[in-house]
Length: 367
Image (cartoon, rainbow, N blue to C red; front, side):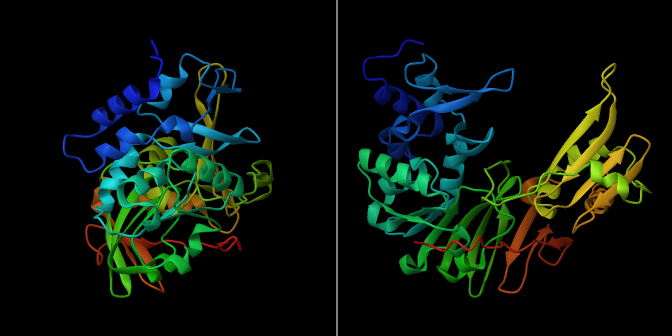
């Protein structure tokens, strides 16, 4: 790719026109806000597993920054901890907010600051509040926002608490994955306000009515960096000390694959792995774990061992009974939030559903 002397202007215009139709209220923001200011470098994983840093000196940098790609921007102990989201997904979520001039918005998950800059371009700095739990991220984002000509309110703290001194909000958007909707957001929102939040491997859009919030999931899938929380490593060896039982799911790997979205709701932050034979790749075992320390392993002989606060494989088996062949589309699911309970439902709030776990605070309120 040949990069012109001033690469940003033409590249960001081209990206904006790929993403938006004429007349889209967000086209001007994507045309104007320079993504490279917020992503001065990013990381790519090589075939050998090493993370390689890509800077503007690399010929691939400019094309990647102004492509419709998510870019890893922070690595800690070999694990990605922050990213610049895929622009088309950002636009989908911004459209879901259905914002109007004069609205006040809270963004949870500042990250690079790019999304906050788009919001500030559309609404004006004084109407945008953005927060992140990581002071290094907010510090860098504040500098880059200033370089791009924007000065929204940037706060450091646990997003589960919101920012009460800047409330009330007409719109709330989260750019980090959560297990459920923090109740303080509902308390800090106006009547009729909209909340757009990634929950599990989907994005929910809720509207505030009285003392509750309710809405449906967007059709597309999404995976966001989870809200920061310490999680123990899975102790699969320790499972050998537990009592085995037979699995009631004949094809465990297939079950996990077609249940990915509902499992991401009922088991927030779940991960899984497989052990395969070296000669033919046959799956010998499947491991499953969640951040609360729950763990399960399904062996090739059909036995299950489980430990921790939850019996994970029983949750898989229950969902498999509901959806034995395939799970319904994401937008078939909805969510209702009240002060005492919130639950995901299929088709209707009074239909089949299950409760979501509360969002536990990390103790780091806003500052």
